[in-house]
Length: 291
Image (cartoon, rainbow, N blue to C red; front, side, top):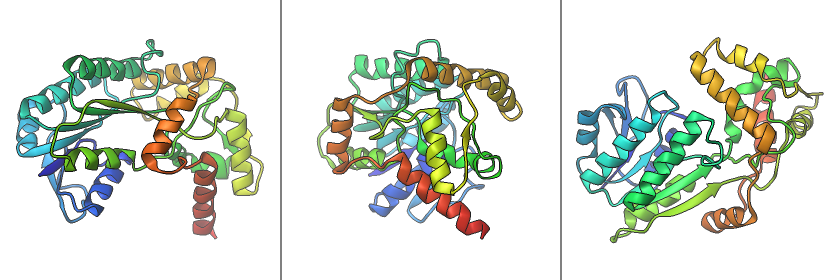
């Protein structure tokens, strides 16, 4: 059978594709531009997106398991619910849905609330799904090289309460393979994707100071400047959404529970990778490349 991966060219989706191919599983990758991307052997790119009902129906033909990753767009909830409905219609035996940590608590942040609404649909429809709830991916900070190396600033205003930042791991692949290889339909489960440590903005600046061997300062909790900067390359609504998310991080944090961390560790068979390890490895790559 075949696994369909949506969001196949993004940060998480591309790693899911690689992991499935390494496991010898045939992959169908949904992309708007199948001719424009590189995919390894064993991957069949198919044209479409999550709002294209006809393309999705065609892409789901013969698919047994699907990875659902919805982009942060104004129509995110519609796109996600359409995808889940069409997957149910196609009779897939397994779904892995990438949601978000504490989406139901942050109801004033639209894209987080959209993911929580999709979770409610999965629960009420009793879909055979694994719901993954990441906090904040460490790999997001790989885009901060200029600020960290050039400016000596950690620019993301995460605040002082703390976030259990998670490394992009192979959890999605583990669950896709478990559902794909099982002959029977497995029940719905939920996992928090959380890191082993709680990080504040100042603590992250200190980690990068150590990793880079130079002083890195935390820029502070101001949200006006980052929103203005994000509007240079994102739609205004998206920049405001990110601002609202960061404001909730500052007010409430996103700290893992002991139970959530223990469940994830049991699934992985190891302690989740720490942000410190990510920063050390990333800084080494940056410094080596510039030497």
